[in-house]
Image (cartoon, rainbow, N blue to C red):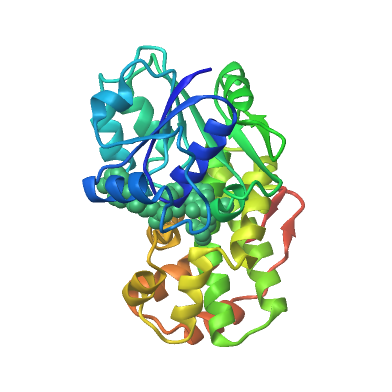
Length: 339
Ligand SMILES: NC(=O)C1=CN([C@@H]2O[C@H](COP(=O)(O)OP(=O)(O)OC[C@H]3O[C@@H](n4cnc5c(N)ncnc54)[C@H](O)[C@@H]3O)[C@@H](O)[C@H]2O)C=CC1
Ligand SMILES: O=C(CO)COP(=O)(O)O
């Protein structure tokens, strides 16, 4: 049995706590907010994860000392905008060889740092880092629906340790050493899911969704390679798998926000209406900036950025996407998707 704390008490942090508790670990769920912790402790249910009871054995706290002292593993499950702040809070507070598993999906605003880099730079060389991702809607993991995900660490032994800790008969965990690929797939599929929602909100069809998913994956894959990740990772759970679930599931907040935007709501109002974090909004800006910086065309993410940040009409964005120059699909000499 390991002492584990999940930092971040939204829908995903709550579902992950439940998995780890069911796997026999001593689990604490840390919330930044007193009121939220009180609600969780009293109702034993997260309002963002209705119908999933929080087992009595999970301790809920806002105390950093109670949460960090003597733990063997810390899970970072906050929204992307709070990952750096949470890492700062944990600096010098974690036991020296603690495993830190990031399950948040995003890229740091303004700096475009991946979370593994933030955590390494802030927490130092001693902690063992891993990133866990894949098609894992909290609503389904919370109900023990059969699910698979992938955990990546530069050190395969760390990935295998995390695999042992998380895996059970409803959650299959695969390992990888491609941290960049897993983290980029996690962050950027949310932008495409927002686009898929926008397409549905505009009243387009299944063909359009298939186009956005396929060409979206192609642009993510080329950026991933340019940034040092592997294309094969994007064909796996953290790429294609998560893209499928986020673009098509009723549970996806990114997709839901997109539908509202496609129907004419502005981005801020749509996110408010969804009522939980819409990571694709933040990731669209990072995708746009990275695409410019590295020189990899990302036409779908760029149009999403323009709709979300520059007030471009969703319909015009779709027309502009469709009327781009003629392209080959795949460059056989370079072995790249043509963007
Ligand atoms: N919900 C899901 O199905 C999945 C979510 N994720 C990822 O997990 C991350 C968290 O998502 P959810 O739990 O769904 O979000 P959520 O919208 O359910 O939760 C928001 C929670 O974040 C916490 N929070 C807000 N500001 C904070 C701060 N400054 N410091 C610490 N905590 C703060 C609050 O406790 C709040 O309840 C996101 O990056 C998301 O993409 C990953 C896989 C599945
Ligand atoms: O990452 C997720 C499922 O794998 C959750 O997606 P949403 O944030 O769009 O709900």
